[in-house]
Structure formats: structure tokens, C-alpha cells
Image (cartoon, rainbow, N blue to C red):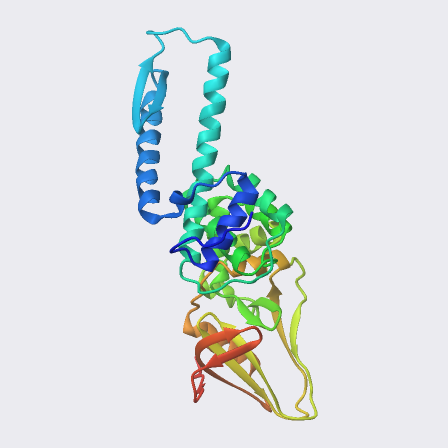
Length: 327
């Protein structure tokens, strides 16, 4: 389905509408409008409260024309076929509301974008996404799924089917643990890792314990291997390497022919790296200082600055860079 000449709708939102139409087969443009979404959210809240209040006395719930009414089962005998139909209808209505909630959030994210990739979102990916998201009712988790949908619309192949599968089975508490640990992710090129250092207690200083690390390894978000090093190899000329720490960049300067430097790290998996795109990390500045202490050596020094823009592998930052003070 190609969307053309829709007044007032940006290119990113047009592409989102195309993806939605491919995923669920039907399209209702108004629910992408914030005002209407807020009204739907109010209706959902009223319905959920009515359902919660009716559980003890087993009343039937009727929702028509924006009104919720309760009918006692004592007033009416409901046959098996009708009870099955009501259960199926309630289940599907809840799923539809989940989908609409996620797509509305995604629309808000894309409304801030000026352009998106011309590449189409894979139809199998779209189908899998909506099959999963229809059963996501927690608002916080819906927010993660919305950002994935917006990210995939903006740049297809940003999130793999494997990542969708992992996220589908992620609980709210597990997602919160990942978000906490992801604050300390260091990005360099195609790699993302945590600083373990020669002092294995570094992460403990930031309240990241063994159980949390073990959980993320079990969830396939961190690699389970313990003996992993990030190496600053020997070059015959001066060189520099940039590392992203959220909104800050640390540049490591290495003089020609200085010895190789190995830094013990914990690597994020491919799935973990993709989910990092959903997290805005803000590590403590002391974490940068720990990194500098691990790296600084004869012929190696570090400086930092504020990130202005990241374009692929190019990092634009403030100048001049500043020396990292010792702990």
C-alpha cells in the first residue's frame, strides 16, 4: 500500500502508515493523532477499572458507544457459545488496543524526524513485529516496542528478528536491569562493551552486581566469555581512537610504536548492541576516569569532550578536548 498526498503528514509518518497497513491489514489514520490517542487512553483506563471491579462478582462487561456497563450474571443466563464469543472479542479488542498504543507512540517518535530511509521495511519483519506486540500491555514495555518500530521505519534492518524474539520474552524487571547496565556501555566502532579492567571491582562501584551480569548473559545480551580484551595495537605512526560514553566522547591518543595495550572488557552481543539504540546512556564521569586509568600508559593519553553529532563512524564533538583528571 502506497500512501500519497496526505495533507499534513510527514514522510516518516507516511512510511509508518504503510508499515502498519502491511502488518495488521487495516488502517485507521485518526489514532495516529495525539489528541485522539489520549481519548482512547482514557477509554482504556475506564474499561480496565470496570473489569478490575467486576472480577469478584463475575459480572458481564458491555462496552458500547464509549460507555461501560455491567450486567450481573444473575440477571441473564449466557450460553457457552456466547461466553466463548465474548472472551474472544475481549481478547482481540485488548490486542488491538495494544497495537494502537504502540503505533501511536512510534508516530510521536517519528514526528520529530525529517526524513527516513527509502528502503522498505521487510514484510516478514513487520508481520513478526505485530504478532508480538499485540500481547504487550505494559506501558513501559510498549514504549520500547514503539521505539523499535520507529527505528526500523527510519532505518530498516536496525533490529533483527532475533532481537524481536529476545525482547518478546523480556520481562519489565529484566528490561530495567538491562537499562541500568546499558548506562555504562562504551561504544567503539562496531563494538559495545563494559569496562571490566584489571580491577574486576570497577562495575561493583556502580552498583552492578554479579547476579545482574549473570542475568544479562543468560538473556543473550552480554557475551558469557570472561577472557575478552579490547586491544590498542601497535602502529608505526601516531593514531587516535574515539569512544562514546553516552553524550561524551573519549579520544585515546597512541604514539607511534608504543606497545600494545590490552583492556579487559565484557562485550555486548549483537542483540544487546541493537537494544542499546533504545537507551540514552549517561554514565557517571568517574567511569570515564576509570577508563582513562586503565588506558593511560607510556605513549598513550586520553582526553574528552561533548558529543555534538554522530554520523555513522564519524563523531563530531566540542573542541578543544579536555584532559581527564585523575580519580
